[in-house]
Length: 351
Image (cartoon, rainbow, N blue to C red; front, side, top):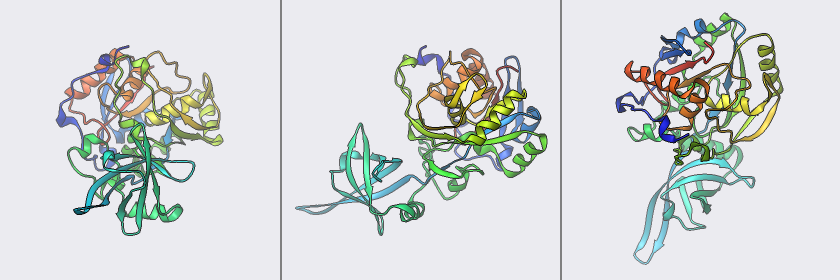
């Protein structure tokens, strides 16, 4: 498979920079193999059956983007440089891996000041990823990060506007619980309390799993041969209760529909055979592409994604490449909004 096979034309004006309000007023495209319906997220319960189950990713996005100053003394006097850091994940010894710009402005051992009493020492880098040692840990680190960090919005938003206070709520699902992501599972952003109550009244079950989304979700696929692309590993967990609920749903004839590609990748990584999942904890770099045999998912609720991205490739694995491109053509022609703050699609390959 060639990467160019997953390309499509997308007008820039369809890239959303703010979410729909209220959340459930976002548009919803519902697609089977032979049908497309235009609806709203508030209509979602009507497209699901009693006994179906949604799988929700309960990860919480941390305010992982920091702006600080590196100060260096030279013969001409103090020299300062602006440093931007996006935290990726903690290391086993308590430091943090981070994407730092400009990395060339730092020397090993230099300090970056983010705020009074909150700074990090540059401990080195490998493969363009920096390691930072912060002066506070634990609850003190969490408080400092919350005070001066900003939400790590994707580049296609920050290229048009800066993150602000509204993003602290907008870029977080209403059920977000376990801190650790540097990107939101964006299909989750379309749900509000009213919609959750409507789904419960419809008899739709909901199970929570955790996959901490890494910055790799922003990285483009560079290999023209799709099969050569390597996914970045992300940490996830499926608890015993969630595994039991998914198994019971499938055994009773209900459909399991992940909310977002992260939830889908996680449950498929935890599958132990067709229609069976077990509790699971660890890192997954599962790359779902056409030819993949789905063990658990009967569909997918997801946003509209970047051309030639791993997310589009995943959706094509579920629906078929040509069918997915037809769906996206309909979405573009219909003015659906794309990417993180955009509209949603419910993909049902057997409908």
